[in-house]
Length: 174
Length: 238
View 1 (cartoon, rainbow over the protein chains, first blue to last red):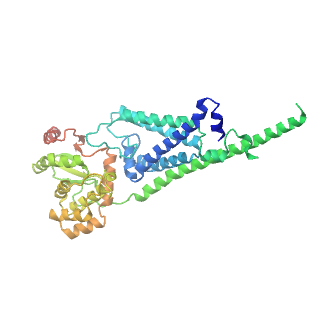
View 2: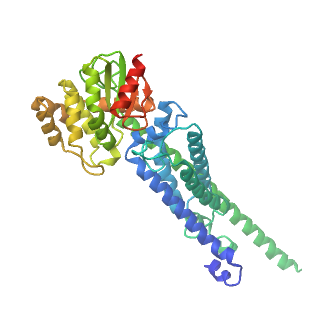
């Protein structure tokens, strides 16, 4: 708890940052667990959602659609534990960039689909218009969380912290 | 600076370097483990899905050649109707424009292919979309797809619940004049579940992203009212 002891004297940012990091990590973990959990029960629908973007052959879309929910759940678990946080944040950021690009491309091609982000199988409910802009803004928000963790991956209460010892306490091993 | 202090300092530097090296190694191993977890997760998803997927299907009597739907009529213009028995808008379409479709069929103007897709399984706790579509296959086998479909829409359960039970699906079939025992065993054996999967996959391949979707000679019809359907059929028949 050296971090909190120092914080009394130090500027506020160094004291607040680790806890912002925890919030970002757990927030992003929740996003992935929800996204994966909502799709994992119907993998065929997940494949249809990928196929609805019309960017790859149907068979490729079903493979991606089947694999994606499990990868999302695994990312969520890694972030929840705080294991390999920087790597998990990097993969999260990459996935989110792909999602944003996909939604933007569906929008620009005038497709009328749901993003399928949280398990809708890609089809819009009756009378529902596509909401591409809110979906993109939401994903940009998630991307910001991932970006924060890419820059400052060390957060309290994480397996990373436990594995490498508390940063800044150099002689702890003695 | 005394030499003893120098020694202490250099010993400390070495210790720190060793500690840093240890941390670096642990970070590398943590990353390797994380990558392995992600890759394995993806492979699990793929293998689970491959395991769920059926490879062979039997289309019911009266299905089109590709086995993607049930044919009524033999007119020059082809109308494709993609419907999910749990979809409220499909029920509405049936109630508003179903009679028009039937008139066009009996007037010999159209050949209608009904595709009972299972898009909305996540909106019931019992995979009602799949179960009702497979049941409609059993009805088609008995030559009564349309009658059964209409009865299913009439008794459409709300989204989010358990849907109709198998017993209820059998009762509805019996009510439309289908042989109860034959239908019941067809339904309970899941005879047409692989067919439902095929119908659904092919619909997705055809970029049908919602239900109901109506195609007239392959072109989507936006206006699903009786007038809209008639106009689209007239235009295609010209």
